[in-house]
Length: 206
Image (tube, rainbow, N blue to C red; front, side, top):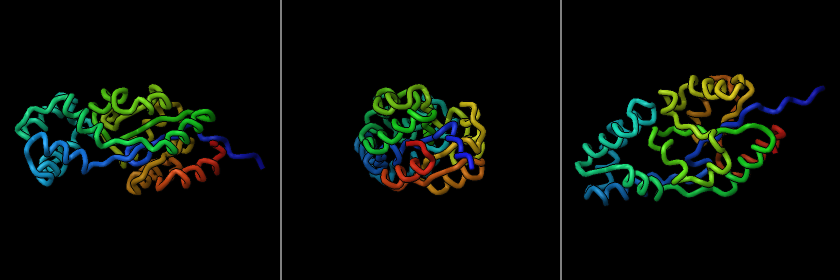
């Protein structure tokens, strides 16, 4: 029996797969900047839908920052966004090393539920990921939708010349894994680097 072909594309989520994303630390930094409580920041930006709208491409970077400034009632520009976002991000060296190893066998890409402003700031915030993924770093806003919409996985795979069944999605959220499976991709729910390594080795990607 012939061995299964290697996947033609392996897609990695960013937050809580390739790095630890501490949303509470980010919200606390914004709260201190605005002179508000942590619950106020969570409500004004997250619960009221500004983050979701940006992630899904309904707000460009300037509109997103303007919406946050209006909600907080303080100036909030690119510098403030980058500083508060950067405080919440710590790379997982083992996961990044696995992505680099996979890249030697088959193409890889990054897909994160983030807005256009993250696309602008990859090189500033995560230069180590740029070293691994090169130009193949994507935010959901580019597709005017977000995970777990099955369409986003199909469109990203097609961008790299892969059919859905030829692509693999690595994500930490089960809902996003379910969306990838519904789109026809193979998928792995990330819990730790050791489990990811076993999964990738099982596909002969390491």
